[in-house]
Amino acid sequence: MTTILSIRDLRKSYADGFEALKGVSLDIEEGEILALLGPNGAGKTTLISTVCGITTPTSGSVTVGGYDIQTEFRAARKMIGLVPQEIALEPFEKVWNTVRFSRGLFGHGSDNARIEVILRKLSLWDKRRNAIKELSGGMKRRVLIAKALAHEPRVLFLDEPTAGVDVELRKDMWEIVAELKQAGVTIILTTHYIEEAEAIADRVGVIDKGELLLVKDKDTLMAQMGKKQIEVMLTEPVSTIPQSLSEHNLTLNGAGDALIYTYDTHAERTGITTLLNDVAQAGLVLRDVQTRQSSLEEIFVNLVSGEPA
Amino acid sequence: MNWSAIAAIYRFEMARFFRTLAQSFLSPVLSTSLYFVVFGTAIGSRIQEIEGVSYGAFIVPGLIMLSVVMLSISNASFGIYFPKFLGTIYELLSAPVNFIEIVIGYVGAAATKALFVGLVILATATFFVDIRIEHPFAMAAFLILSCLSFSLLGFIVGIWAGNFEQMSLVPQLVVTPLIFLGGTFYSISMLPPLWQTITLFNPVVYLISGFRWSFYGIADVPIFWSLLAILAFTGICLAIIGWIFKTGWRIRS
Image 1 (cartoon, one colour):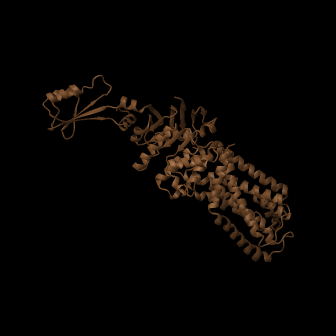
Image 2: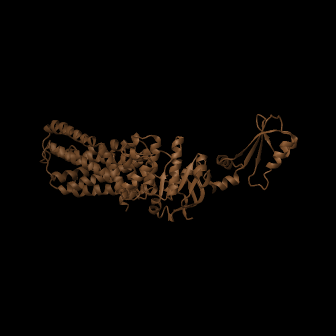
Image 3: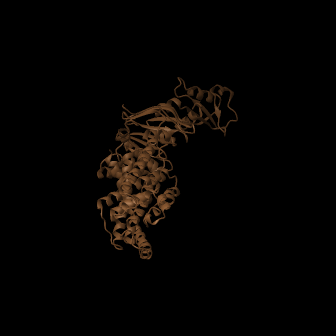
């Protein structure tokens, strides 16, 4: 794999002393989808804005495809497409013209066939002659993506692309992202929706208070930090956990009809077999057994709050 | 140079102009006609010729300048302020363009629109008065330079402005008085000596004087000073814009 985006010790401080980025370093491989998770004000948008040239960094370096974003900004920026968080479009302009404008702005000659392909892919072809103000919110978001794709970027930043959109459109967006990945586009997306990262990302980065807390392969992250729970449901509720089961460190649910056992999937012994034997020996009759794995959301919340998952 | 970007910005800005074509042309034609009715006919009939030129014809260069200057400022300030207001400036800031290309695109389009309107007013004026242009090349040069320099000023205003109210502040409170007191409707030789001296501190005097000279060969100040003034004004505006983009003032955090 080739590193397409390299961020080194990137810092951004403002005049009032606020540090939005505190030395972020990150390498992104060509063709991958990286999801950046973080609470509001974590520095996600600042990081994207700095890489894209909208915000000037205080120190540190960023290269895109080997080009420095400051000294070789033309070559670097040509490779980047940005879909901003807010819907920012000229309301009176037509869809076709606004996409063509973006292509020209990034130094590409007119290519109607290319724009047609993009508009068709994003289901905007029928709306190409419509003024932006006539479009729905979801359609406007598609126009933003079309604009970002108009100059054929190799790296695409999606800053909360599905914030405030309905479930159907969100699924459409995921499909679009998957298609772009197929086409070899590297995608960095920020999101509040953990399920989004879980569904489409190859790697997950967690950022909080201007610091990158971790960047890991999504599956590895979930396997390493995720814990599993087994819920042993009983036919008859109990008021307390029997003494003979005390060594299993169980908790009882509110209704008293389920014992909850948390275990580490990576431990040599999960202790499930012993637990189930001991439950039977304690005279409890099992109604059902369910397992549950911590979601990325729980991992994320625990990381940000500094507690183990 | 990223010529595609310049062309894209220019085309995008001109599209705004053509979307409101009727308004863009009808408005200056109507206001110019009103000026001729009020100043040229009603007042002009009571004023004798000024340096051999009828009053109606005398005010034509000033009227053109009045519209050209105001439109240059409003076109350019709106052109760059609107993306700031809408948030679409993110695209400009993240594009592989430098400040020269951005300025050429926006200012070029704003100046073109003002130039169109200036020519429309000139054509309208011919229906009311006899106009002669003694120095057509100088006239074209003054007109184009005025469009460009005040579009540059408008660009600065658009970047500086934090809201729509501030955008109209400079044209209404600074530029309009300077134009009206800059010899648009009179020759400064008609003023008392003290006011003549004070008026010489008004940069618009040099602009209108030079422009009027290109029509009728009469000027309030030597043509050299008019040319120098407009070039100096253009240079100052360019220097300010260069500084704005270098520091990112009001556009880049």
